[in-house]
Image 1 (tube, rainbow, N blue to C red):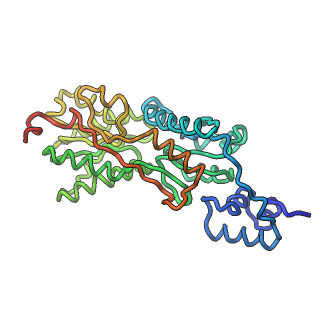
Image 2 (image 1 turned 45 degrees about the vertical axis):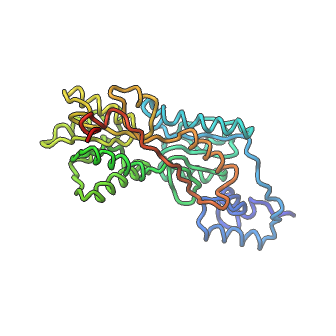
Image 3 (image 1 turned 135 degrees about the vertical axis):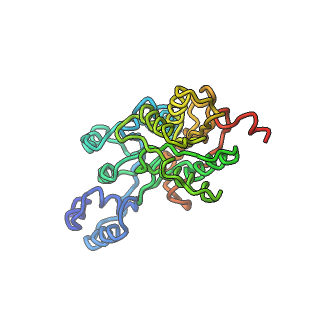
Length: 332
């Protein structure tokens, strides 16, 4: 009687998905587990010739429910557009799933029956573990986690460029307006901000590091965090916000407080969503090629890392607009 994957799973004491990933040498397993499963398969006499990789015909694009908001739509819609473009070229049918930690994710995945998963943005470790148990190829976009293929913008470099730009405009008290630092991209942008201050010989002031309240959407959360910054005895003269939606909301709070932008306070965002160029004043930001993030995510699923790094990083570009410079500082 021929040995099956189910036989190996029973003998090795692991799930069928774990056996599949180990035998196909897919990411998402500890090396010790991979070796154990392969040793059991060899001992049982499993025919490795059965392991033909399954062609990706259906792909599930997964987005955390907290990202599925109007404030986040401009960024992730552009990423999804890149995914759809790549899928059309490759003959893959994409589907969309918005999930949260309380959802029956495994059941939803079974209903969609995708051949591969493309996860965009923040996900809790518990959700990533559920995705792994599905036993399908996985790639992450705008997230980094051990054992997964991923593609990210150069968040740390972007944070550095944003703060360096404000320093060069003569700004002295630069605030960082942040979402939860549990998010990889926000944490890296904060690291870049801190590094720019350090390199300029400036001691970081914790009072200028404002984190939005937990559980609030970006726009009201950023507005409230900006009000707290403006209430300081020595308010900031510049703000680097973790994304454009937060920056635009913070700008509105400053203008409603009677401040002139950018004379009294300058702003820089991140992502370069369409609204950034249309704001008054137009928003200086870090441009991210959001469509390319989606295209590279699909490429990782189709071809793996190859000889390149498991985690790909895309460059970002500082786009200087009216929100961060004044006529006097331009001439200076």
